Image (cartoon, rainbow, N blue to C red; front, top):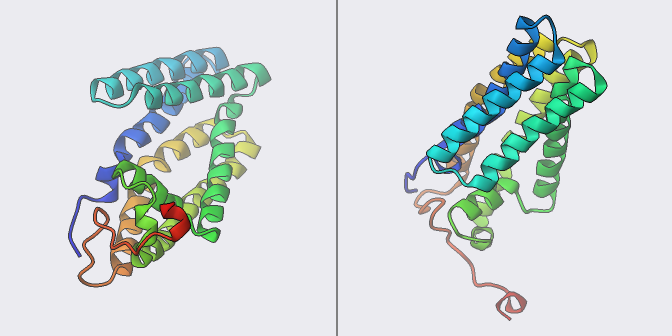
Length: 217
């Protein structure tokens, strides 16, 4: 098998992790420094998010992806301001991890693993990777690692959220973002490489079978 760049390099894992963790850190710092003020925490979170957005745009990220990240932080801040509960800043994160775990698990069951879908889009392959039985099997196995990632977050976040432990939620958000994302990408990449047969040309070069007649039109 060829040795292309890692999943982390393909998917820009470090940038996505910073986008998710720094605004949460800003919220907790603002909340603590200004006497547990949710308003101050919300302002700090948005300021951190704007800084991260500017950095990402400067490094060539697509404006739409940057805007979605910024919008997520603004919605989380508005939820906390509306409910008056600082821990609700993390509610959107909790719900998104539950939805992600479910979506990734369903994608495996229906044999459209999201890991393959995402990498296929990044590499401009559309669904060609799916006609490679070995690559499909590798993506199916690798996607279970991503399901586990979201489940781990839920197991940690839910008790902290229910207990109202705001600082612990912020720490968990940082610890379970880049370190966990890095571990997830490394392990899923290892699973993919172990699953592909010797001599397979790698992710960029699916060994495709002929498309079904109805797909060829």
